[in-house]
Image 1 (spheres, protein in one colour):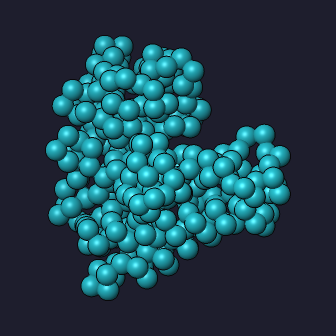
Image 2: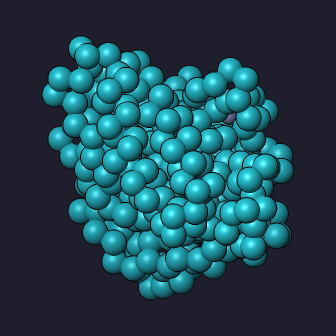
Length: 309
Ligand SMILES: [Zn+2]
């Protein structure tokens, strides 16, 4: 190891965060920006390098951990499906290594966030753990028998693509009825736009119809937004109970801007999932909110540099 600090980068569909993190998981410095996808993968690379250079300054840094919203081919260090969903295979690990002259580790963003919560947040001390983050998309991660689930190709834990309705709306992945199509920020916005009741909803006059707009409308009592919230809760309850039935976890960690921003969605999801999962799986099961806020991704990614998995 070349130093006591590492850089963690968290590239979501909407937000990009970069942080300088020490070996205890403490964030020394953080940069938050919106992910700028207008310049394609090369533009996002420039954004990452600019942030990483600023954070590095004169510090000795051991390496960079990167979590990105998409599927990563971990054998090749390639992002297979990046934030704007138009990226072809992007060798982000190699690009960043060449730019920064530092070791780079690349994984899915919610896998990195799961590592952060497991080591320093709501998952501390847990050997059987699953996590779902509901933001612009829905991602997941799992710890099984004390080890991070990675899967044969590094893509384990994509719980957002659990289908909860065989003839449901099309998801961004091309299949019908994924929970992401109902409950993610992008799914909620699409469903609002396509709803026959849109014209009588306050969402009809929203300039930027996204998940946050649905959350604000629900808080104001808008009937369409509240119905979409209820449908999202039903879909999430089903998906989370499926995950519980498959993994038999000690703890389920839920979070993300939509789950915590859309009124009552967290409580409705917890109640629904507890009701629907197998009774044998309910005993000793805890369901918790994330503890590290929007920093779990950078803390997890940097900790991977300090303590490889
Ligand atoms: Zn899907």
